[in-house]
Amino acid sequence: MHKVEKHLLDELLQDDIEKADVYNLRQNGHLVKRKENPYIHIRSKEDGSGIDIEVLPDTLFGVIDIPVIITESGLTDIVYNDFYIGKNANVTIVAGCGIHNHAEQSSRHDGIHRFFLEENAKVRYIERHYAEGKGEGKKVLNPTTEVSLKKNAYLMMDTIQLKGVDESVRLTKANVEDGATLVINEKILTSQNQKATTDFQVVLRGGNASCHVVSRSVARDNSYQEFSSNIIGKDQCYGHVECDAIIQDKARVKAIPEIDAQSVDANLVHEATIGKIAGSQLVKLMTLGLSEKEAEEVIIQGFLK
Image 1: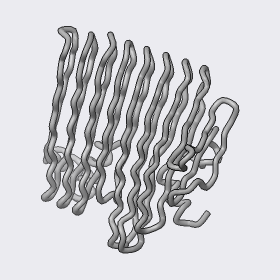
Image 2: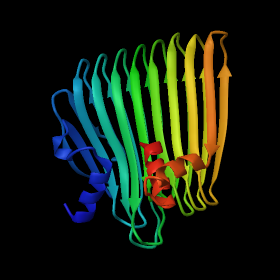
Image 3: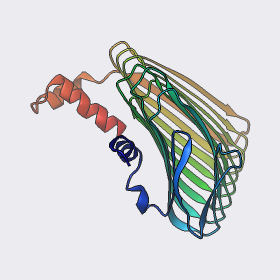
């Protein structure tokens, strides 16, 4: 593997891909290598547009790495991945895309992921997006996630976009049934003229269904961010959405909250805070010998941690 490809993988994955229980590595629209085991199966779709991952019932603590890397300028890569998580299974899935664009044409990856969690299944899903390259071509990443949670299923999503992505449209749709839980932690940093749009659409259908969404973002320079959420409660349920953003320079951040209680027993909360770094925080760190810029970086890194 060349230096550029290895660097992209290091940015996307928590550990060496070879240490995962199973993995699927896609580069420039094609399968590079794959590993399976008796409990977790990966199958290419017949048209080559993506993969189906099946986790057998009662599979415990499996680690699945499915990174995508793009090093070809001008490429548009669209992939459809479906995850079938069996009853009582518990796995970690690490996904995401890294783009290195050194030329003039735009490079783009659209990842459409669908999760089907059976009763009592549990998944931690980590998705990192990273882009680099000195070329004029844009680096575009558009993730779509569709979630179906059966009774008492649990999905935690950690989505991270902290560098280099020029444009992104991030869409998450979920249906949450009886006793199931959806937890989403989103972190985004934009700078220069970058644009990022996030849209959460969650339906809490069953009794005691719950979701907890936290989005933390920093917008710098002339960048633009838009956050929207629509949480619908159809039964006794709990939904909480929190959008916190730090704005700097001439950036713009827009939050569009919507909650729809369709039951008297639905408990839905939305909070949004957008503002600059507090002067008192800067002063406190500057008394320790940091410059104002250094103090800002410490605060931002802590905010996005």
